[in-house]
Image (cartoon, rainbow, N blue to C red; front, side, top):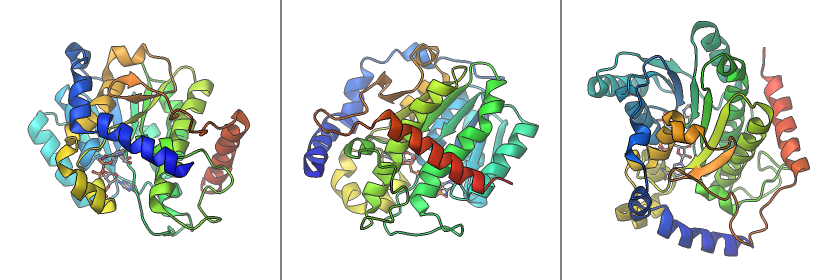
Length: 318
Ligand SMILES: NC(=O)c1ccc[n+]([C@@H]2O[C@H](COP(=O)([O-])OP(=O)(O)OC[C@H]3O[C@@H](n4cnc5c(N)ncnc54)[C@H](OP(=O)(O)O)[C@@H]3O)[C@@H](O)[C@H]2O)c1
């Protein structure tokens, strides 16, 4: 089954996730969807110092939005802020230092942020693919801690603040790579299988899609979406998938092309007219399963994911 899923996924990717896939899809985009004045709206973007996150921050800043860059490294974050301010001429760009793999730091940030600022849109973009099984200082597997638990805690902790704001949205940058994985709620930190970073990452990205669907069902006042940016040439792809990067280099999307649907989901009126909880690719809601892939989970499994994350998250709450 995994050979079948990987093969049809890769063939799909060559068609759709590449630069030429983007260009074909972009012929149907409505340019005016992104003609928005965002002054007075506040955006949190995690992992905003590079790649898709930085490009998204740039587009929002250009349109006058207040942007909170949530990054783990102060000098990389300040450098990104400087570039964004210079290019957008928007001074309302703020840096917050948070390691998304540290549940305590994420809880602390969300608490302090909610006391001092408002938020209209949360963009869960920070992500990693760590190829060896590495543990954080809290003993959590690194990919799971960053991609799944960090995203879960930040979103859950900001829901009350989001509910107080106008047209609140949560956009989670998942990956089409999740299509090769069926949700596994029995082994969230890959303790029972021989470790494979690509599969761990894909499982986390599947979990993000399921979380988005569950949040949407529970919190009707907020518009939730998850998305796939396509294959974009970013530092993460170069560092974590060097062979793929070398082979695909000429076919990869630019960072801005990867960011396009994130921006569209975060700011456009067209996106807010779509039902909440869906998975998007190139400004369209798409299936979260490959044909005949037997990757659908039961609602009991999806509820179990949410309750396991809730229990784990609580352990790190003051
Ligand atoms: N590029 C693609 O083809 C592609 C495809 C599918 C999905 N995605 C997803 O797109 C998102 C953005 O990735 P990218 O491709 O734009 O790569 P990128 O340029 O390397 O960006 C990843 C960002 O996440 C940050 N990050 C990683 N771990 C973190 C942590 N523990 N705490 C805080 N920030 C952390 C990185 O910070 P540092 O700079 O400090 O490392 C960086 O700012 C990710 O969620 C990725 O999974 C990308």
